[in-house]
Amino acid sequence: MKKSIKILTIVGARPQFIKAAVVSRAVASHNRSNPETAVHEDICHTGQHYDHGMSQVFFDEMGIPEPYINLGVGSGLHGQTTAAMLAGIEQEIVARKPDAVLVYGDTNSTLAGALSAAKLNVPLAHVEAGLRSFNRRMPEEINRVVTDHVARLLFCPCSNAQEQLRREGVETGVHVVGDVMYDALLYYRSGAVSPAISEPFALATIHRAENTDDPVRLENIITALDACPVKVVLPTHPRTREAVKRGAIKPRGSLELIDPVSYREMLGYLQECRFVITDSGGLQKEAYFSEKPCITVRDETEWVELASAGANRVVGAGKDRILSAFDWAMAKSGSFSHNRIYGDGHSGEKILEILMQTLDRQP
Ligand code: UD1
Image (cartoon, rainbow, N blue to C red; front, top):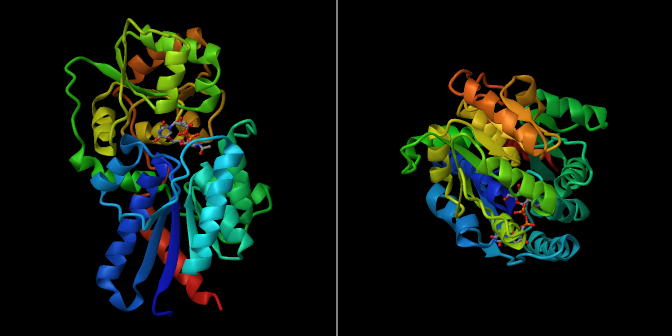
């Protein structure tokens, strides 16, 4: 076995900080017990998310090692920002010569990390491989497909994802390891911060471009949330805050827009809410892990197992469908249990072990 391996982790957007925290913790724990085969991890932050509440708070609170570099790419058009990330990451790979590049999920930072590694012929590992919404208008779907097709190691959260990769002809290097977000929730939930709310409430998040950039969809969703039978707390992504302001939409009923919250605060809201309404991929699963019904305000989901299990209703952005889903969620609240569709909470260790074994066999 090699003395040590060197991994370059690329992160840039909020959900990636949470996912990367799990593998970084597995690395730290391995290094403590096995200094002779210590794994060296460098974290490169693209700067895609840059507000304190969207980025730094996660590093502080989750004990994630500080990135050695922030490329400071920020906001802009997809081509512009992805190009800037590509140029920056390429330089870092050339300078650091990692044994592998590790990317998470489906963001533009994922895509940039994937393309940079593939073009430099550095093994690419993709955590959350094989997910598909089959909606090519979503930037995330393009990012997923491209990343999976250039990755050498593909870590799937569930067997459906592995099956999808097989249908696309990707069979080598595929491993079903479970979902790192489940590991994260189990590890951090004892430190969840309880929200100061005494009445029953639902937790909502809305940030997908398909909802925020379509004034009709956004107004429908906000109006429906405002008419919910219980209070709705919506930690608001900056993009959504802007769109609500632009559309001059003024909630006056159940809906309360608050600033983005930290991971521990989010876990507190999840533990205490009646149900969840979201267009986020991650929150659909976190609702399930927390045994809360979830209403998904999208036209499809990549987490199809949750819909089949009856834990999630995918209702689109029509006001009436959202309103009737509130009745379902209120009735379902408190009456279903999580049965480990996405692994056993040890995905981080499995990913690290497979990475080490595979890289050890590289010439
Ligand atoms: C990105 C990911 C999405 C992920 C989400 C999590 C892509 C294509 N999408 O979407 O898969 O679920 O992150 O949050 O990568 N902004 C700020 N401050 C910030 C960050 C963003 O003001 O700290 C604003 C900017 O105006 C920016 C907009 O939010 O233009 C959207 O950010 P963007 O990077 O396009 O992606 P997200 O919508 O956050």
